[in-house]
Structure formats: C-alpha cells, structure tokens
Length: 187
Length: 187
DNA sequence: GACCATCTTGAATGTTCATTCAAGTTAAAT
DNA sequence: ATTTAACTTGAATGAACATTCAAGATGGTC
Image (tube, rainbow over all chains, first blue to last red; front, side):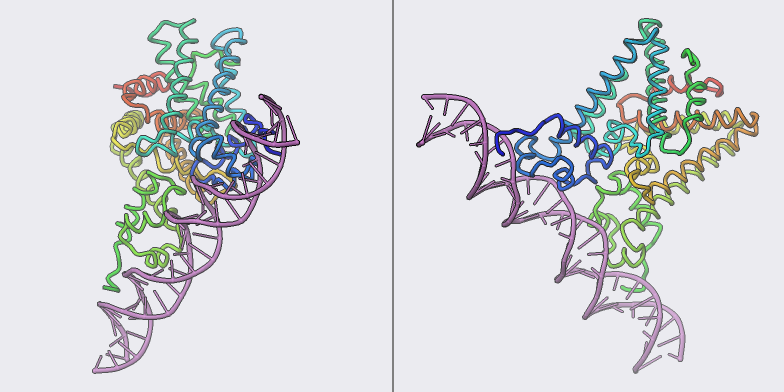
C-alpha cells in the first residue's frame, strides 16, 4: 500500500505522547516505530532523523498549548478570571495518572547542555507564553506591573509543573497559588 | 597498583557533575569511565551498576544541598533573612556558565515514568527540603501559615530552577520573588 | 497499458551501549 | 617467603541503538 500516505498529524500526536513521557534520550526509534506504526524508512524520509521528528512533535505541542491558553483567556469574563482557570487546569492535569509535567519544560531541562537546538526551541516557546501573558495583562494593568506579574505567573506555573508529581498535592498547590498570586480573582 | 583503593568521594563528586549535566539516559558508562578515571570493573564492583552509581551521586548531592540550606538558615539573623539569602543564592547560581538547574528536579522530571526508583529518591529528598522549610518557618509563624508558605517557597524555587535557563533573567526573577513572597524581609 | 514519480518496506549496517570476567597486582597475614 | 584476600584491569560480550537503502508497491499521466 504505497502512495496511501500516512496521516502526518496522527504520527506527530503519537510521537508527542512518547517523547513527552520518556524524553529525547530515553525514547528509541524502535519505540517510535512501534508507537507510530511507521517503518524506519518512512520516518526518515518524512522527518530526516530522530531530532527532526522530536522537533515537529515539540512544536506541535507548543502550538496546541498556546492556542489553548489564548482560547481560555479570550473566552473568560476577565483576564484575571481566565488566568485562574488556566492555573486550575494545570493543577488538574497534575492529578492525572501518568502525569508528565510539561513537554516544553522537560525538554528545556533535559537538553540544556551545549546550546542544543531543541533546547532553544523549547525555550523560545516558553518565552512566547510569557509574552502572551504580558500582552493580556496589559489590558488591565500598566506596563511595569504586567511585566512583573507575567514573570510571577511563569514562576508559579513552572513550580506547579514540578511540584505536581507529588501525590495529592492539588489542594496544597491551590493554596500556594493563592498565597503567591493574591492579585488574581480567585474562586 | 591494586589495593590502593580509589577515592570514593572524589568519584562520586565527578559522577555528580556528569549526571547532573547530562541526566541518566544521556550519560554513558564510557563517559563515566573517562570522567572518573576508573575502569569498568572497578565501577561495577563498587556501585553495582549505572543506577547504583547514579543513586549515590544523587543522594550525595541532596545531602550537601540540605546541609547548605541548614547552614544558611542557622547562621542568618532570622528565618526570613536566611530564606532571602537562600533564594538569592539560587538566582545567583542560574547566572553561571553551564547552569544545570537542580539535580533533584532534573531527575524527578527525567525518570518519572513507571514508578522509577531514582524518581522516588529525588522526590523524597525534595519533600525533605519542604519539611525543613516548614520546621524553620514554625519558629516564626503558626502551623497553618508555615505549611502554606513552605509550599509557596517550593513553588518559587522550582520556578526559578526552570526559569533560570533564560539569559539575563536574574533581575526579573528577583522582582518576581518579591511579588510572590511579599512576607519575606527583602533587600 | 506502459511509464514514472512517489511512497513504503524491513532487513542490513556499523556503532555504541551496559555489563562481565579471567587475569593481573598489591598489601596484609601467616 | 608464601599465601590469601582485596582490588584493579581492559578486552570481550551480546543487546540495542540510529540510520540506510535496494527492492517493492501504488496511483496519476500520457
């Protein structure tokens, strides 16, 4: 069945699952073959190499995440309320079985050595998220405050992404966010 | 030169450097051989396997970190002042060339899948740090407040450990900490 | 219906991996 | 001086790794 090209989006989604869970180094191409159903030749023709596939998976994840953030902030009654919903969703995610933190953060930490290219991609996307927060905050606060609070938001989100591995920590994290982000319109 | 046993502490320190930077999967035993100067046989006799060496390195790192925290908090004029110094030190560390975040956090994220043993070690040590903060805070605040603020501290430290990869972010992080931890005696 | 460009296939490649072990070396015990 | 226990040595092992490529299959084109 040649010419009946595989579904690229489907392959990328499955690769996101694998790479997000195991990271770059601990995911083998043999696992990719098993997970995606593609044969090695097809993968290498379509994505070049392991790094190419990882990059596409990472970028797809980032794009979806950013779209999700935009949507939540756009549909909320206020920026503050949207941010609360966003933070609640992050906490909620951490209660999942097989919680995997955030693909971007994991990549930033795993591939930090020696100016790795994938590390740069992850970092750029995380910066994009911060810039997005800043631009939304500027609808309600002045420039300086918006910049500071965007940083504070990022620190808290990173914190939750790491803290969330602890079992039954959701309530504690919610309290922690209320402590550290008192300017948000909680509940 | 048999019987002239190698310096175990030295080997562990060198292993910390390697594993901290590259993580578990991306560090090969051949790199360990090169870094430590030991031959494979010696490593396997002394530590069992790669995981055994990694575990000792991780535990040694954790012990040193906790001792450092204790020392800073014990020698400060107040708990609050000690915490400020601690947080400043974490920010300071992030300005280093070859910044590597925190070995415990990196391990928690890298080896989270399937109840990995090393993940549990890292998580247990991180919980120990939180408990330590709580016990110091209880010298100045009541039980409930201490618990909440310990969580908030952990969230901020995790945040800084991830955010710190961004170049020239020290000042921004300092501002962010002042925003999120206003109960600390800053400056 | 013959052809060609396009895509798939999966066995094969050479490398690197974690780990082992028989042989070698030394310090202490006898 | 000889033995013994403790430790080192480094080549060898087999498995797993990322990647390649010649051969096969298919759909569109003339």
